[in-house]
Length: 338
Image 1 (cartoon, rainbow, N blue to C red):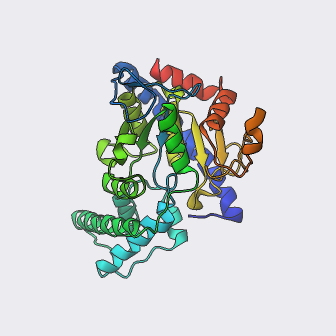
Image 2: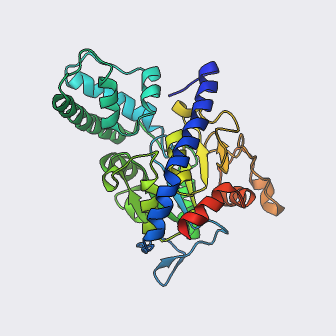
Image 3: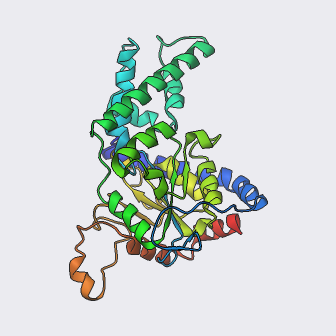
């Protein structure tokens, strides 16, 4: 998924255009939808900051963290899905193979089955009939999911640096979490059961996957659904994303966004225009170095214990959020959840 040099600059411009276009198209629709429906409460995850059955955040300004999965929790696209797609092609006896460059282009299409159909449209050896093509895509996607689960179970796909620490910190400090992905629930289950244990879902107040929505990112439905289940306003729910489609979806729902660059989208936010409206962009949660805006130095006796190579923490995100407000996206978020 890596784009370099001129391709990186083009990717940055394309990301800016895509985010602006999608946000403009869907914000009015999302505003009407969320305003029309009452926000429902959600079951609180296990954690020490529970009061009367309701999770209470002890971090100023942050009511919830909304986690993307692929590329954000782990480098699943590079180390998992791409490998599994190629295994599925071989299992099916097809001569197809996606390299990094082709897969990077296909990642502009959200959803595995949709990605397969998009690829088949350019293949002379793909089935011509629409129904036959769809059946092949479904069969390949099922094979891919099985191969992906095997790869995850083998330990080939670790969580990205800093992810586990931030998840644990949310539990300790009463910050609700949600999974907000349009990948399949089976893929999410395989990854998080391995890394967080059999009771992984109890850490999250909401788990929203592809099966829970009718539209995939960049449509904001996954975030709208999560906000409704959490019972929080968009302006207090920070989305953590790695892709332009994910950022566009979160922004359209009114959520502030932290971008953790992943391999296939390493240069997607290369210029300021591409990252407009995002509260922070950086190389990953595992280091406090390399972020824009820069992580603020810790004050007092803890300063010496917080070198820039330590993971990003909740206080860093709260600081970015405080510096971002008031801004254009906070106004959008207010109008959506008011």
